[in-house]
Amino acid sequence: MYGLDNAGRALDSLSASALSFLRAMDRNRSRVAAETNLTGSEVRALARVAEAGSITPKMLAESLEMTTGAVTAISNRLVALNLLTRVAHPHDRRSLLLVLTPDAEQITQKVYDDFQALIAHAARGLSPEDQARLGDLLSSMALTVGSDADLSLAGPSA
Image 1 (cartoon, rainbow, N blue to C red):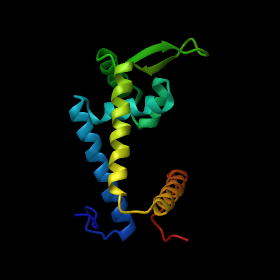
Image 2 (cartoon, helix red, strand yellow):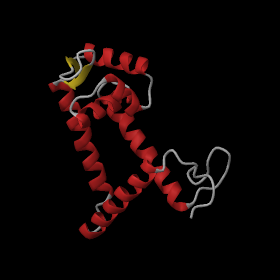
Image 3 (cartoon, rainbow, N blue to C red):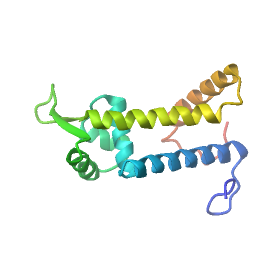
């Protein structure tokens, strides 16, 4: 149940709402994965490559918080499906870059289009000004959460 974690500890309203939103986004990624006959991890990998334009397997592994072995398995499958290609790294002859194929570009465009449509639908009751404020707040919170990710936040907040 939202509002409680597995140990029965109550989450505050904002944390519970954020968790609910993240779970809804997870369900959407699972839906897209099923529609494209990919796994959620493969969809995440394609999205990261799309965001970067091209990326080394090591950087992709770090971005996905996976081992390089796991990313090798994922990229091998995506190459076999003609969704990724491996190209020589222009500055490091010992490395390579992963790049989307046109088929993968269509999939990632659909993912982003679906995401935008879902967010627009969810925010349909908000004024453009409220949407802008919410966007600013989410961006600010993302920066804070990202920069504090290595800190222990279990204690009281300042």
